[in-house]
Picture 1: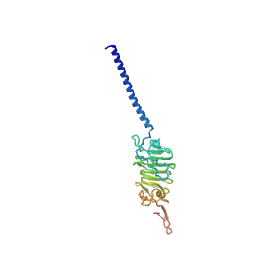
Picture 2: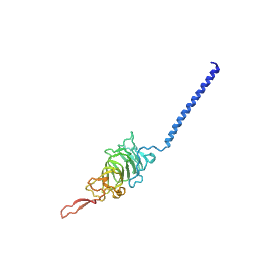
Picture 3: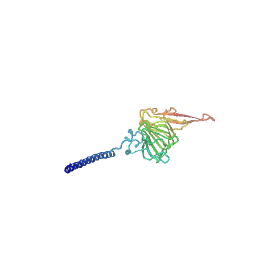
Picture 4: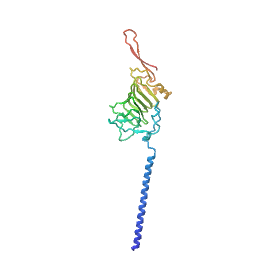
Length: 282
């Protein structure tokens, strides 16, 4: 081959190599640009819901900041329950709204402790929270706990309200709730509780109750109650036309809206022992 032809072949080969390099560079650049665009779109888009369930509107009496219509989003003030204190319990901080999230690395079978007193919301989000059998869950005088469920979960364990406030909305409590003197207990939605124990001065306040609500109130035969077990005003205001026994069952078969007064009848004659009796307004 002559020198002239060799030079032509060399030039053509070099041109082809340059064209291939340019084409490859353009292809890779376009792929990177598309990936960057996708990342930017994901960052600017609204955060994806961490739950497919829609949070119901607030139906609980006197709870302006209870449930916000929408979904569980970190941008909506909700945080996944993950904080653990030094004792290995989940720690609930003041003014925080928590939700349970199905995850392989989180097990909801620890105790619940209040890192700070205040107003706290915990949504089961359709999952089950089970307290350890030896854990005493107590809501103190400076704490308001809104315990709710936007799915079909359950709270397994016993709760004592010791001067604080417990608001139950749509929660299946598989255990007991004890409200001591000076406490406040409120219920709404399809809340279910197998056994509620009320001190003499504690009356349950009602929001709008769902047809599936089922709450059993244990009656102490030695009680000195001077008020009903269920607040008539809140029940009538939010469940007009409904029968209270559709939602509440008294362990002694009485009406939960009735006043239960313990009276002592005087002795009939000298030397006779007085006896006690119970009566209600129903």
